[in-house]
Length: 519
Image (cartoon, rainbow, N blue to C red; front, top):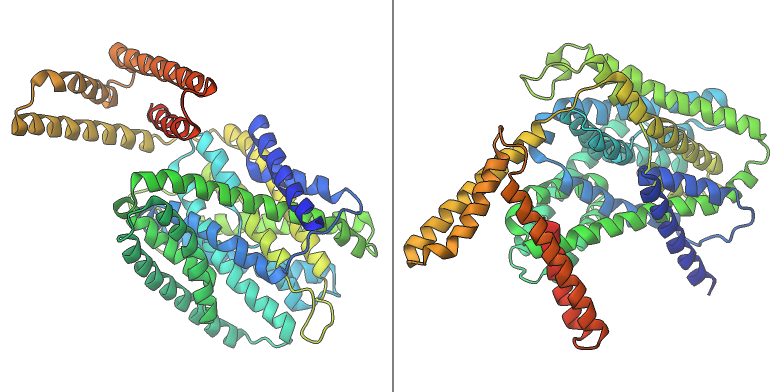
C-alpha cells in the first residue's frame, strides 16, 4: 500500500510542478529542480524503492529516441563537425577537468569515481535552453548546434560514464584498452541502431492501425536499447541512430492520425519520466544529506559552487577555443555561413545547463561494489550532480533571456520565410489539383469557386509583400471560429440533456478539436 501512495504522490507532484511552470512561464526543468529542492528539505520522507540499474533502461531510451526523431537530418549533417567538437571533444574535456577538480578538492575520492562525476555532468541538456531560445527568435544556427550537441553528447557522455563505473567496480583501467573499446562499442551501437531502425521502418510500412503504430513506436527505443546492450555495444548510440533514421522516413510512412496521437503520447511519456527522476532525487536527497553529515553545510556549499564553476568555465574555454581555430579544422555551420559573433559564442557558452540525463546517470550508480563494500562516495556524487544541475538550470537558465537581450543578438527570419514559401507552394499546388479535378470529372465550377478564393487569399498572405492577412482571410477565420464555438456549445448541451452518448460526444469533439487546431 505504501508503494501505491508513493506513486500517487509522484503524480500529484508532477501535476503541481507542471502547473507552476506553465503559470509562471519558465521552462519545465527549472520547475522540476525547484520541486526536487523542496522535497529534499522535507525530513524523513518515505523512500521510493527502485533498482538503480533500471533507471537508465526506463528513462533514457524514450528521451533519446524522441530527440532523434525531432532532429533535422539535413541540419545535423551540415553541422556535423562543430557538433562533434562540442558533443565529443567538450564531453571528454569536461570529464577530465571536473574529475581532476574533484580529486584536488577532495583527495579521498578515488580517481575513477572522480571521473564518474565528470562523465555524469559532461553532457548539457538543451531542453531548457532551446525552449527559451525559441521564444526569443534567436538565429537558428545557434539552436541547431545546441540541439545537435545535446543529441550526441548524451551518448558520448554515457559511454564514458559506463567505462568510469566499470573501472570503479573492477579497479582496473587502461587508456589504450578503453580507447579501443570506446571505438568498438560506439561503432557497434550506431550499426545496431541503423539495422534495427530499417527493420522497424519495414514493419511500420505494413501497419494500418494508428494504435498499433503508436505502440510499435513506443516499443522501438526499448527494443533497440536492450538489443544493443545484449550485444555489448552502446545502447544509447543505437537509440540515437535509430531515432535519426526513423525521423528521416517518418513523413513518408506515418499517417496523420498516428502523428497526432504519437505526439501527445511522447510528450506525456517524456513529461512523466522527467518528473519521476527529479522527484526521486528529491525523495533521496534527505538521506543523501544525512550520509554526508561529516561535511559541514559550508563545506558542501563551497564544494558544489567550485565544481559547478569548473563545469561552466570549461565550456566557455572550449567554445571560444573552437571558434578561433582555423575554420578548416573547426568547421562552420555551412560553407557560406559567417563565423559566429562574440555575442553568439557567449550564448552558446552560457547554454550549458545540465538536466535529466545527468540525474538519471547519478541515480543509476551501483549501491555496492562486487565484494559488497559500498560504492565509494556515491552520496557525494549524487549531491554534486544535483547541485550542478540546480546551479546551471536556475543560474544560467533564468538569466539566459536577460543575457540575450543585453547582447542584442538579432533574430533569424529564415524559418518565417521558409514557412511563407511552403504555404504559397502548397496553396498553388492545391489550386492546380482543384482545376485538374474539375476538368477531369466535369464538375460544376461553382463548387470550387469558394475554395479557390480561400486558397488565393492564402497565397497572397504568404507573399513577401503580403504579410498582413487580407480582410477576407481574416473574416473567414473569425467566421470559422464563431461556428466552432457554437457547434461545441450545442454538442455539450445535447450531451448534458442525454440526447447523445459519451461515444458520440468524444467522436464529434475530436473533430472539432482538429478543426480548431488547424486554424
